[in-house]
Each structure stands twice: as structure tokens, then as C-alpha cells.
Image 1 (tube, helix red, strand yellow):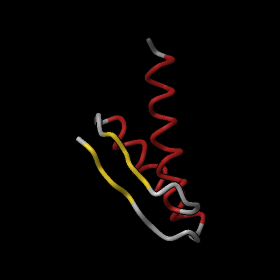
Image 2 (cartoon, rainbow, N blue to C red):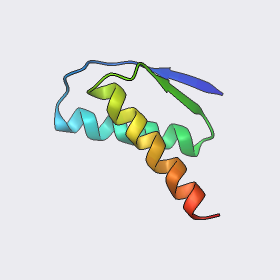
Image 3 (cartoon, rainbow, N blue to C red):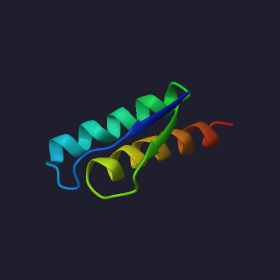
Length: 60
């Protein structure tokens, strides 16, 4: 499953935390997370997905 995420380049800390959570949950569910590579929400989603993959790899 692939999920594309886009969002504003500027976001609040709350929005950034939620975006990281969304990225992590998507990755933990097995999704490939695609984003535009920008700052703000897109960067936070990518960080969350990356954190989930790093934890999964560390557990192997």
C-alpha cells in the first residue's frame, strides 16, 4: 500500500507532532509513505515513517 501525504510548509508544533504520529502509524501498518519532500507537515510525516522503520530494523 502506498499513501501520499502533502501539507503546508509552515505548521505549528502540535501539527508537526500529529504529522509525525501519522507517518509512524502508516509505516507501522506497512504502508509506503510518499511525500513531496518539503518542510513542515511533509518533513514531519517523513520523520515519523523513518523512525518507525528504524525501530523495526533495530528489532531484527
